[in-house]
Image 1 (cartoon, protein in one colour):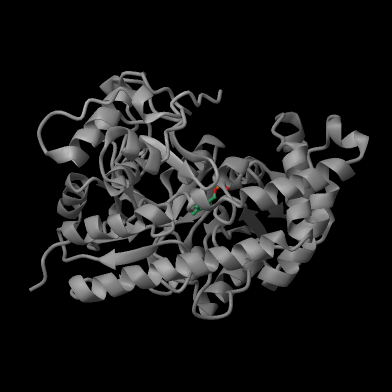
Image 2 (cartoon, rainbow, N blue to C red):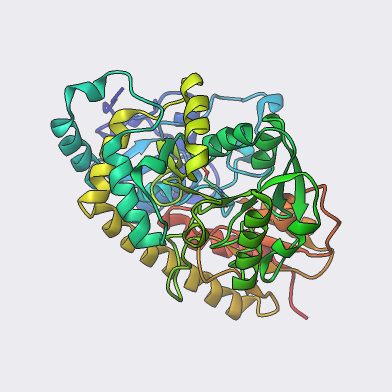
Length: 474
Ligand SMILES: Cc1ncc(COP(=O)(O)O)c(C=O)c1O
C-alpha cells in the first residue's frame, strides 16, 4: 500500500544530535525511524533538497545519506517515484535459526546483511525492462483470445512456442519446431520433469555445478555421477566408461561455474556417446545470450536434436521471478514430458507467456539484450581493470561470456578470502561451494564473482570490497 505522508521533512522528527557529525546522525536517525516502524515500508521520503532545507543542512549530506541507505537496502530509489522506504525490509529481529544458510543475500537479519553481493544466481534485477514489459503485457492482453483465460494445456501457449522456435533458431542455432517446445516454470522444473521421465539409473553431471540441481535429479529417483571439468569443459569422452547412465547434464556454452565453453571435441564426444547409447544430453543454456568477445557459441542441440534436450530460461536475460523457461525436446520425449507435466498442475501463467511472446516478436527482447550485454560487458571490463591495477597477482578466467568470472587464488586461501569478504560486507562464493562432493578432491582455490548481480549504483562499492578482501600480492 502506498504511504506518502512523509512529504515534509519536519514531519519526520529526525533527531540529528549525537556523535559523528551530521551525516552519521542523519543515517542513524533514518535507520532508527525505519527500524522502529515510524517510517513504514513504501513511505515516500522528501526530496533531498526539501529535507535539507527543512533540517537546515547541506543537500549533499542528505543525498549521500539516501544513497548509502539505498545501497544498504533500507531505502529504494526509482526514477520518477523518488526515494522510499524499502518495501521488502525483513521482519525485525529475525530469529537466528530462521536465517538463510550461506553468505548469500537471503532473508538474514539486517545487522549481518551484506551491503554488497557478487554471488551468482540472479542477474541485475534492478534493470528489469518494466516499461517495455508493461507495454508488451498491454498489447498481449488486448489481443489475447478469450480461451487464453481458461485452463490450458501442459504444452504452454502456442503463441510463445511459435516465436521461441524462430528466436532460438536465429539466436542460438537451435533446431526447433513449436511442437517440440514445452514451456516450463524455470529450468528447474524442466530438469525435474526430465529426470522423472528418464526414470532410474544415473545422470552424469559436471563436477562443478549447482547443488540444488543435483538434488532435484536425485529426488526424481536418478543417481548423479560427476564428470570431471577442466579448461575444455566437461570431459565427455569419459561418458563411455560409465555404466547405467541415461543422460548427461551439461552447460556447453559457458560451464557453470568455471566459465569455459565446451571444446568442439568434447561436444562431438557427447553427441557420439548419446547416439551410441540412446542416452540424452540435457543442455542447460542458462546464459548463452551473453557473449562478449566472439560470436555466440551455438547450441549443442543444433548438432543432434534427437539426442539433445535444449533448455533455455528467462531467468538471466529477464528475471528469475518470471519462472519462464522452455525445453526443446527430441520427438520421443514430447509425450512423456507432457503426460507428466499434465498431471502435476505445474503450469506457467498464460498471461506472462503471452507477454513474453509479444516481447520477443516485437523486438523488445533483442533491444533489452543488447542493452544488458553492454551493461554487463562494461562491468566485466571494470572488474578486470580493477584487478589488473590493484591485484595483478589474481588471474581472471571465464570472462568471454555470461555474468560471472572466476578469480584464481593461491592454494589454501579461498575460505580466508570469503571470511575477509564477509567482514567487508560483501556476499561472495568460492568455487569449492559448487564442487560435487562425489567428485575427487581438486586443489583449486578460486572465487566465482558474479559481476552481473548488483544494481549499477552498488557495483563500484562491491568491487572495492572485493579488492580489500583479496590476499596481498607478493
Ligand atoms: C547453471 C544454471 N542453470 C540454470 C539456471 C536457471 O534456472 P531457472 O530457470 O530455474 O531460474 C541458472 C540460474 O541462475 C543457472 O545458474
